[in-house]
Image (tube, rainbow, N blue to C red; front, top):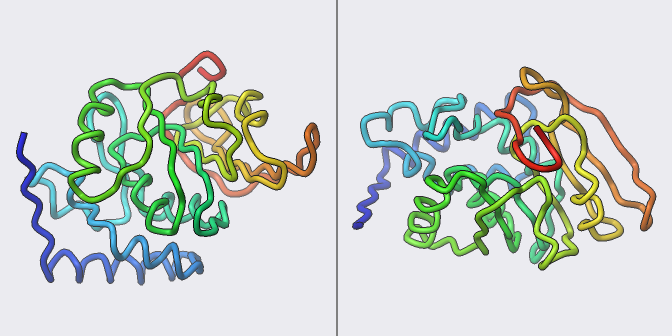
Length: 218
């Protein structure tokens, strides 16, 4: 399958305007804003819907999933405090937009997707765009123990609780960012691993994600 992507002044200008929207909503991390300005979000849309790509909204991508609202992507990424070279586990690859943003801020990304149709699409599209994370197909709620521990873990679907297996795969000093709640609404939660069995948790703003499905989730 051939991929022909067009990213011209129109799309680049739309990204700059999106960055200004995110600044007004409270996103401050310059590295995160620069990543949003660089990653061509319209590449994850059917060409018919390119006019929707730089609105600050979520959008369906198939398999009952969505590409997250740019504000949500920026918000979660900012909470991770990524340093260049950080090993980051992403639970829920989806279309790969969040993956690309993580890589643009300097992360080495390990990403897992449960939906095979999304996985098959993303493993083709992202390398074509120049992004080469380590891809996995499987149950994200149990993490990827083979490559643990991780500096940071990001979950891009709503969970009923914080999966214990993800906490085990986090380095001491590492951060987990995860939306926790019911299937309609979640609170963003950050977990700092302060010692092998000690954690510092903070409950932040309300969001709405698709459900995290798996052995340690819904």
